[in-house]
Length: 95
Image 1 (spheres, rainbow, N blue to C red):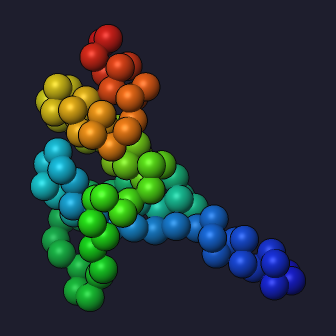
Image 2: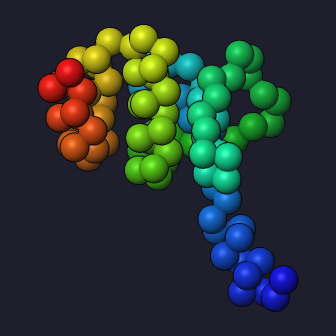
């Protein structure tokens, strides 16, 4: 793999841990695995990224995960709108 491929692979694989504004749980998002995991306990020395700095893709996946776990639809829709995810918020409100 040349340097350009290595760099694009590193950019494409984003992992972030943040606090969900819906449940208050620490959530870990991996773009390479395309999944969200609610952490049961705080991981030592894990950097927690502020919600405002999390990518749109990660926010969407975290909110979808919260919704699937039974979170209040109105709360998820409100947080989605605040994050600029209006299409997702609209889809929740139409359900």
